[in-house]
Picture (cartoon, rainbow, N blue to C red):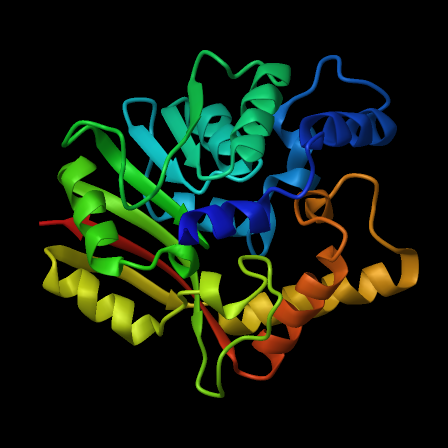
Length: 275
């Protein structure tokens, strides 16, 4: 099944949690008294990491009354930031059990278990009742979802009236498909990336109003080039997103950088409101 192949792509280490905790100990000297800010290096399994998370959160005007769903939680960095910064309740889901387990463990180590919860689920088959969330947050997940229509229906279903999608996604660029393997896929059978215009049209036609729609491709490209330049000089740090990507992390990161530089990928940040 397609879902199984996607899970295999992301599930790169049976001992992922132990590997990350070991890297934290090496980087920070231990696991005691950690805060969400201490884990910034592992936070962002998405372009520009914590910086892009802050920018998107600022568009939403969040507070402690909001209930947020993060689809495709990765290591849980967005969940930890939103819970610690705004005091809101955040649930994170991911197809990959090792990611959800890691995210829950890291939330515990920074004292956020009471505000967060994690589990395995498919973004197109959400295990939640209708109208339960103020915000649905998506960081680089639509590329792994074959049925965009069903996915958008699910986002609409679980959002409260006037609830919002916080979107930070990678799309096809004008100069061809992105290179593979990439962070989200090792082969074409698990990559369902489409154009930004396509998803924008689908969202608008399925009762979502666009409040913000920003092309951040150029600053994303600059970030990638700087990151790759640093790694050529000093290699990857003990603690970083490469731990989530397996032994060919370097190739995946390089291909993402090439795709952005050559116009094969486009990055959009946006906010949409349920109507």
